[in-house]
Length: 157
Image (tube, rainbow, N blue to C red; front, side):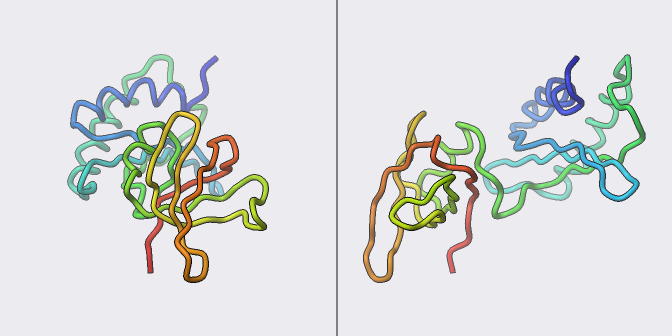
C-alpha cells in the first residue's frame, strides 16, 4: 500500500507541472494534535502567494475527490515556497543549483571538515564540483554525492 506522501505526489505532480511549477517536496507530519500536509512548489524567479493560493485550491479539490480517501485523519493543507535555503534533493534540484551558492553537510569529515559552503561549479549523476573559500584561499573540490548527507541552497553573507 502506498504511503500518503506517495499517493499525494502521484495525484498532484501533473497538476503542479501543468502550471510550469516544480514540485519540490511533500510532507505529511503531525505537530501537536494536528496533522499537516505541506506541498512545496517553486518556479524560476520564485513562487508568489497567488501561485500558492491557486494551486492550493486545485490540490484540495483533487484530494477531496479521491476514493478511497488516502488520509487516515483530518489534516491542514499548506502550499508554499520552499524558501531561499531550500533543500537540494533531486537531480533537477542539483542541475538548477549549478552556479549557485550552496551548503553541504557530509556523512564523514574530509580534511577535518563535515560542512562546506561555496559555489556549485558542476554536477553529474555521481559527483559535484564545489568552489569554496578556506581562509583567504579559493579551493575547488570534487565530492561524491554518496558522501553528502544533506544539501541546500545558501545565502552568502
